[in-house]
Length: 277
Length: 277
Image (tube, rainbow over all chains, first blue to last red; front, side, top):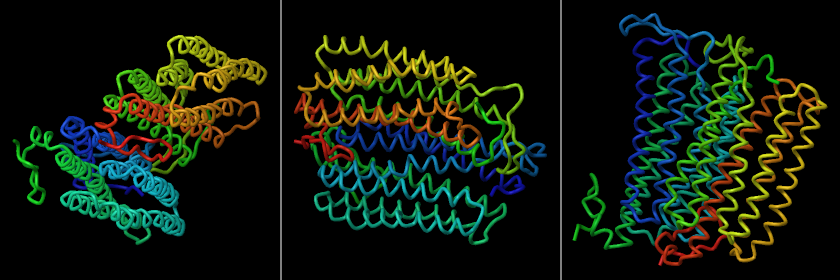
């Protein structure tokens, strides 16, 4: 539930967090689109999906931002005051679920797409991952909007089942298909999976806060900040690692392309990039 | 008719459904534009029309969303309350008909365009499909805005005649022209026609609700949700299948293009894509 009132510092923290997400997602999307020619055509599908995911997230954060701004009135003069709930408006948290319903399956599609696995393997992985991701989000929603702890726990547990299944597919089944990937790519995929696991764990934690009896303005601000950082990690940072994988694989596939495009990769010492010829 | 009042859950459901459609259509349009270079030039016309259709739908859903938001006032504080009709404004359902008037003929054009049939066959199909689609929408509108069941039934029946004619052209006449399409393309076209039929059937069902005596807030919310999902299926999902057909035919037409672009197709086992050379 939205708190009855926020201090200036609490209001500003949420305001700035939400705006940070908009900037991160929007400009990651634009960066990915501009960087498309820097990977071989066969890896552009993954990049386009990554850009679309960041774009969808930017759209929803615009809505969340507006909804948040409208949900409070303040007695502030010159930037200091107390923020209380406005009458006749509501802060709509449902946007987050609508966003996840579209973006979470796509995040898994972009991971599988960038690996360019054999067609049969790819199809088999996606047939498991996409329905599981959709189910995970759909089962979480009734718990999120319920007002009783019992319903929240029940739907939370149900939603955890497809989540564990996704982890199984990514950490066990997918690993079997990575033999033919270059060593540097395998390292990046490991990093990507850990990022995914770490950022996705924020969501059930935030979901469980009311059941754990953690409420009040500070908890709510923490939850909004946590969701914001998790969304930046799970979509924008994730997309940049996808781009690194796509570049690395492009260089590996086509030395001539590597010679034209080749330059040291940004900020990494673990990957070996062919130098410009 | 718009209900006198909505609960918070009903209001949020419609609000989130409408926003989901905006996000789906807008980002499908962007995806299609970014994916244009991934099909041969002769299939890009179909992709551009598909992107335009999704863009038009996104525009109209922005309008519907704003109209819906403005049509209710609430006593909600902090996200819980009752929503009652605002005075001095009205929810404009006519947008949907304006949208369909533009997009429904274009949906049929994009299907015919992606098949790249002989020019004479293509012209003959379009001369039947475009006027029939326009007539279907124009005849439905007087029934939608009428206040009597009799008028609703009359115009509904009249509108069904061109609808049945479209089905005849798509399922009988078009089938005769598909001999030279690859097997995988024929399978996708079958799936596309079934998607079209299934999603288009939602509209007459929603249209018939008042005649069937189904009214009230729940029915209205169901209708808005149904329209939303049907529009996503009939335009965005439909467009993605058009893209799959275009990719498949591009690979089939030009093995060199397939070798450059070639990577496993996303999520399908029924299509045979040449692997990268």
